[in-house]
Image 1 (cartoon, rainbow, N blue to C red):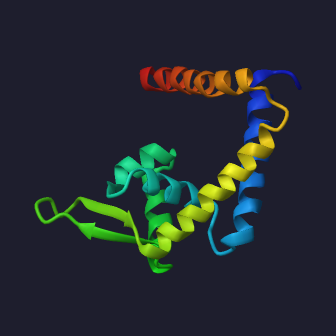
Image 2 (cartoon, rainbow, N blue to C red):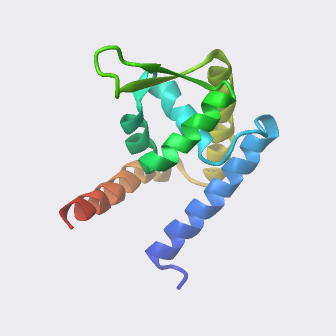
Length: 145
């Protein structure tokens, strides 16, 4: 089974996620597993609506609703209802959320550097486009199913 693409991708994702959560726990011990990627997303895309966050973080909308409720209770985000469309809620980082997101981004950078330690520059530049292409192919197939 080893050396098969599905195994290597799943194993790498599992180890990468575990390592990131361990690194984040050093400076942000109260974050739950779904919260770091939401913080990073909101740092890059401030004032987003929930469906954009769900899509950008690959989180199912009901799961995101629970994550956001906990983040709001912890003072990490602020939600503002749109006056024109009462069903639309804009989510943004609070000051505490922004500070926490910066710590999360530093943890991401530390783990990425560790993962790329023995990877050459050429391999690194090839990796991201390849992963994007694989994801795009799979998303196209699932949309056509």
